[in-house]
Length: 101
Image (tube, rainbow, N blue to C red; front, top):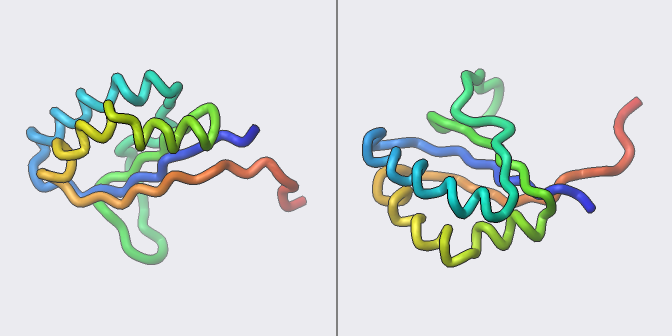
């Protein structure tokens, strides 16, 4: 079964207030088996548009990724994020097919 991922791009308007969201998201993410692969790391925008911060969060499956986002626990903390930031979040299924040779 392919893993699921959140791809998150965010511009933060109030870094101190955003910390409340970061602290609050730990519990719902852990409940669904999430693991950060990328979290606020240095990056170079080589094409297209960018936001200040990026994250890639891996889940055991696409179903886990969707269920975490839709969970009451996560939905309850979205206002902490949306009040102090602008985000683009996609939930996507991983790929387990053939790779370029």
